[in-house]
Amino acid sequence: MHCTPAPATWLNRVERFFRDISENRLRSGVFTSVPEPVAAIDAYVAHHNTNPKPFIWAKSARDILHKAIRAHSRLSSKKNATLRQYCTGVTNKKAPHL
Image (tube, rainbow, N blue to C red; front, side, top):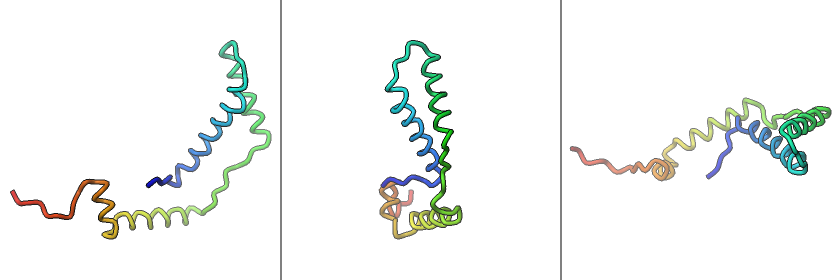
């Protein structure tokens, strides 16, 4: 099961930005010194910032928090005892008294 927490969505945008710099500017260039790729990155960022597209949240903070609370309650409920057992290795059997 894979879940990207809502706060991590901005990180995805950052990763995509660095991917775009790598693919669109750095891999296509031939650089003979360190200042050249630095200048290429600066030029890419300046060009990218001429027409900025702000990140717009699709959901309100309230909706995101409610979804996180619902997910937490489902994961911690008795309905998912098997999942917890699998993830933690804990069983519902009583341990023998020592």
